[in-house]
Image (cartoon, rainbow, N blue to C red; front, side, top):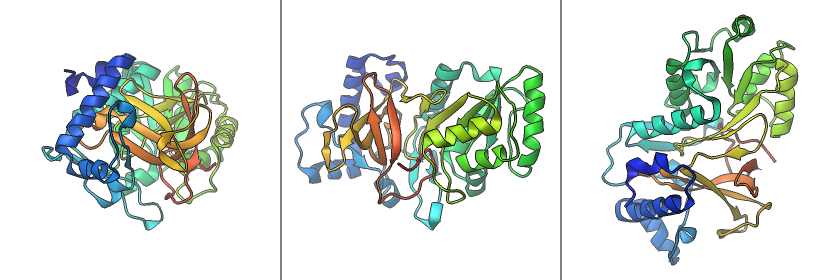
Length: 323
């Protein structure tokens, strides 16, 4: 039997992942009263991992999505865009989240200690209880000494970046989309070696943009082609990354599926646009099977695009750009 501690060592093994998914489903049915009730209400026969139902993400706004044996170490809250109800994710083991985001970041970008990380995430800092802030703060503390959040004087940030780049430092700027665009408007700059990690989200500050349009604006404003994207959300403890504008890819304990837009229990054909379902095994103690409000497209190699959201969804803060 694969133990829950082993989910971070799957290393692309499809059979091991499928076994872990089945064990996670069994655990959920035994210990998550909400998920069990949801599955039983569907009256759907589940014979294999492909039959496993995905819990609508909206349940994180209206219910406590937890297993009954789980104590709560911390609760993350989503952004309150438009004054709507915030999703809440009760975390049983913070080390699962830390292991997930650190392993994924370093697999994509190398050792955190080699980076100077700067964060331009004003709305998340102001609201508090953000899983994104928790992640970036953890990375900043592990990164080079000058790494920090920037909140009150963003206009001083370009000089800081220029100085660091001139010293040959590896610099990555994490930022919510509208704040990055505001900073780019102070340019144009010529920061050819700067890495930018956009986490999405206009939050009503600017008009929504498709990702290619956003990346074009950031490239022009900052003078760099190293524009990356992070796909994450309060309700998930793992992240997918898009490197240099390419498609998103998941860590080995996370997988994305595309469902039919008019039939949530059927999978869309490869290359078709549909709703994004996520299996995130790091969510072992909340719910690993989440039906998001995002629209996406899957590719043959397992990478995927995020193309927008369903019309009924709230405007969300983590990398949701309109179609």
